[in-house]
Structures are given as structure tokens and as C-alpha cells.
Amino acid sequence: MLAAKKYKAPHPYPPTSPEFRRVHRIPPVIEREQVLHVAKLARLRLSEAEVDVMVGELSGILEHVDRIGRLDLDGVEPTSHVVALENVWRSDEAAWESLPQDVALAEAPEPQDGAFRVPSPQAE
Image (cartoon, rainbow, N blue to C red; front, side, top):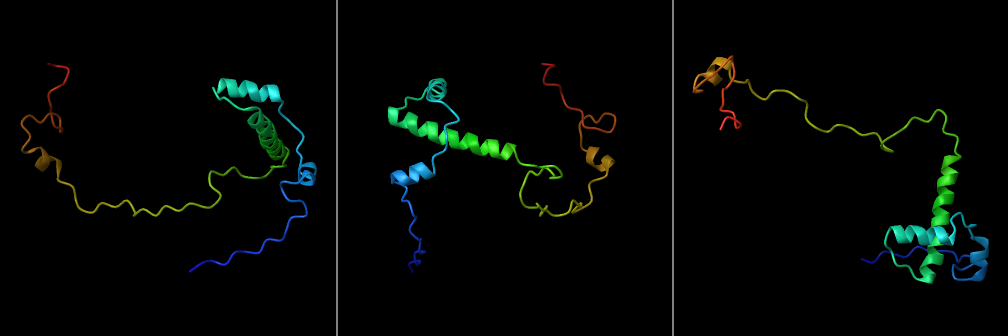
């Protein structure tokens, strides 16, 4: 069964139009030289077109980080997850009784102070 495509209203400025670029232009936060420097450190070979794209994309990322940094987060508790986590494991209860210590050590060749005595691997 094929899913019906959702209707998308046409954007007043298609993404390929010059108007779209003018309206949605993010001022560069990072300069071309900085992109080239980071690319060199990462050992990336970028074409001239890729450098121009990276300037815009990295500027957009840095702008979003700046916006997040300006948020008033007083009184907001830090979280590690956006939803509450529940422990779904079974409760920690013994399924059976353990052997008494004297029974467990009864067959040991050389018990010592209520424990199994084993040869030291460093003694050899």
C-alpha cells in the first residue's frame, strides 16, 4: 500500500532562487580563512565551492550555538534525557539460598581463613 504524499504549499521563494538566498542569508560568523585552517587541521581537501558552502553552514551552526547561549535557563534543571527513564529490570532478590560456607569449602584442597586458597600466579 502506497502512502499518500502530504501536500506542501509552494514556498514563496524556492530554495534555488536569489530571493531565497537574500531572505535566508545568515551573516558569516566564521571567515573563509578560518574554514581553510580547520580543513587543513582535519586534513580535508575542499574545493572552492565547498569552502563557500562550509562558510555558510558553519556560520549557521555557530549562530544557533550563540542563540542557545543567550537563553535564560535560570531554574531549568539539567537533564541527561528528555524523557524520564524507568528501570525495567527485575528486583534484586536471591532466587535461591547460597551454600553455607562450611559446605562450600568442604571439598576445597586447602581452605584458609574461610576462603579458597589458590596458588599465586606470581609464585612460579
